Amino acid sequence: MFSELVRKNRSIRFYDDKNVPFSKLRSLIDDARLSSSTLNKQSFRYILITDTQLTEKIFNMTNLPTKAKVPLQNRPKAFIVMITNKDLQLSEKFLYYNIGIATQNLTLSATEKGLGCIVLHSINFDNLDKVLKLDSQKKSVSLIGIGNPIQKVEIANIDNETEDLTYYEKDGIHVVPKLSTKALIYREI
Ligand SMILES: Cc1cc2nc3c(=O)[nH]c(=O)nc-3n(C[C@H](O)[C@H](O)[C@H](O)COP(=O)(O)O)c2cc1C
Image (cartoon, rainbow, N blue to C red; front, top):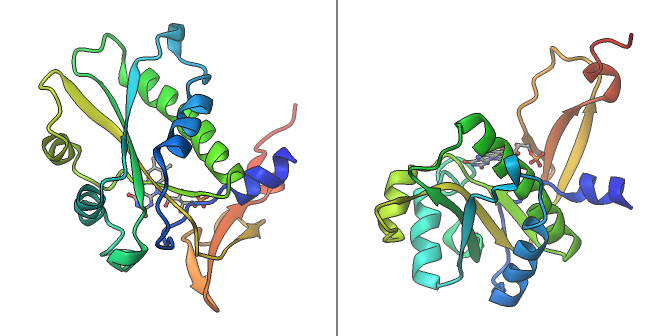
């Protein structure tokens, strides 16, 4: 079951026109909140966004329309922004580790509920702070797009680590090359 879910939990860039209600987004936070964090400080908070104007604005700040050529109507219908205090007494190596764990819990939870997600860090977070009118002592540190997926995604298992690992489209399917277990284990002692 877990292996199936983790294989299904792929980055999704194209979504249908259905909205994602706040109740669903809250249920994702309810799973993300149980994540491990350094000293159990739980030092970030979440902004849930479904407002049409704002989702359009944020979508246009990401690389989805330019790189993946996602049309406006197929944008994520909701965004979750993680924010933290600017004067957080925690080094970045811990902060981003914590964000990674919470993000994975959140996206696994979304996938299990039939939603799709995309982590979006090719964005200017200072500009995002301005768009969100964040308090001056806060800053955004992560952005996740969410919606009802319409994109077909497959994994290609790769044994040869010198192969190109860039994702690609084939016959209308988004293919994500993943190194095999054999290729990943460097040493067994
Ligand atoms: C920290 C992080 C930042 C990312 N930023 C972007 C982004 O700005 N735009 C985008 O299209 N995908 C982004 N991605 C998604 C990756 O491209 C994706 O994880 C990768 O292609 C592997 O696909 P998978 O998530 O389905 O395994 C990001 C992923 C991570 C973990």
